[in-house]
Amino acid sequence: MSLNKTKTWKVLLVSLAAALSFSVLSACSSKGGTAADNSTAVATYKGGTITEKAFDLDQKIMKFLSPDQAQYLQIDAFKESILKQEIAFEYLAGKATDEAKKEAKKEADAQVEAMKKGLGKTYKDTLKQQGITEEDIHAYMVRVLTVYQDMLLKVTDEDVKKEFEATKGDFTVANLRHVLIGFTDADKKERSKEDALKLAKQVKAELDGGADFAEVVKKYTDDTASKETGGEYKDKPLGTYVESFKKAAQTLPLNTISEPVESQFGYHIIKVESRTEKTFDQLTDEQKENIKQSLASKSLESFMEKELDGIIEKINLPKSSAPADEKGTEPSASPEATKAAE
Image (cartoon, rainbow, N blue to C red; front, side, top):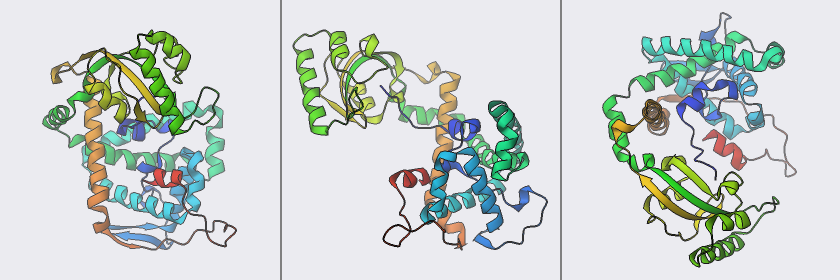
């Protein structure tokens, strides 16, 4: 059973050695270096500009940190989305507190060292291939982490408690079992939604008829992670599961067999054996920190959605030189590129 893939700020912004997501990019403008930058402005906003040279440097850093998504930088819509996010990070970093900047530098130092250790002997050669320096990477990280730290420092203990009360069901710990009838079977062959649902109903009928859950799991499940444990997941907060699975596990009467529950992975037949609600005082420090990170992330999302357009004065991004398709037009953004940009 795959757990919820929602990334926290810590994953997105601190685990840079594992490559940053494109959704958290910041500008490495001329402020981060010593050379004069007289290149054309590709964007102007209240209080500053992003130059063509600075944006080009950012793209090189992106390719270094996330090479699997570098192809999307040939798509104009994607590049503009990244540029807008770059503006947001420049703008917000400029308004951050000194405390946030201090913490960001400390964290960036640690992340650069972790990256160097992870890449080993290939570190310098990889930087050289991309035409960037360690100072460029460090400045980039400081900019991003400054925004992260500033958002985080604004979250109060009262905010954390309030968010817990609003989402306390996510912290309920449950022991449960499930059978997954996937949209891809054990042989990696695609299975239609209709066929998956038909088989899921068959599984439910067998379980309702008294079949042993563990035996049914071994016979049918496509969840390799729980196949050998009879489909069991023990002592997991329900918030770690994907949304539809979580909701079903929160409300299903104990020790009953659910109807097929659809998720992006397929259909689940679920049996919840126990549920234990948590109080705020019972949360671990890590769980409280995760709530803070979630609230910080929501603050950034809110800024992007509601305030960013109001500070942008002009976008002057040159068209991409991406190769035209057979119809003579530039390729449109793929669903993957659109998702990454968002």
